[in-house]
Length: 142
Image (tube, rainbow, N blue to C red; front, side, top):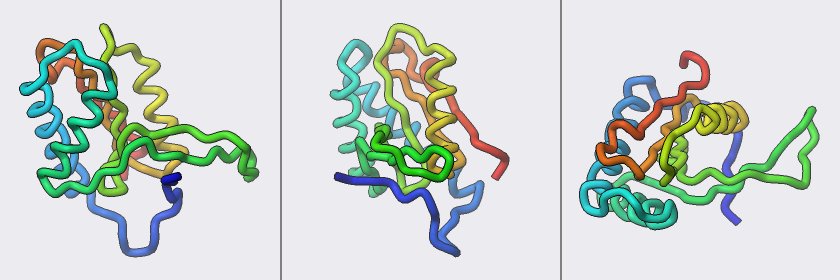
């Protein structure tokens, strides 16, 4: 099972500008997927197409990443899953829902905190205009 490492090695942190550029590339890939498929499909369909589109753009992506849950320093026999992890830096939470609700952004913020990541995107493909379904979530001010 694929797991995420919660600690980065020294010297491997990317800059804020590189992170923003990566987010733009991911949004561009999402726009292409949405342009090809449109709204109304299952989240799993968009996930598979996003993976394909990102790989076509030479962007490293891992999907359905297991993240162990720690509580007060103890690892619990529970984990959660990230939809997509891009270049080990950017967490993507994919949706295909009628409306984005604030809970999705809060959930992503929790994922960012638990994995020590800075930036994530909630992308809802069930929109006529995809830009209306994209939310940026930032953990801290890195």
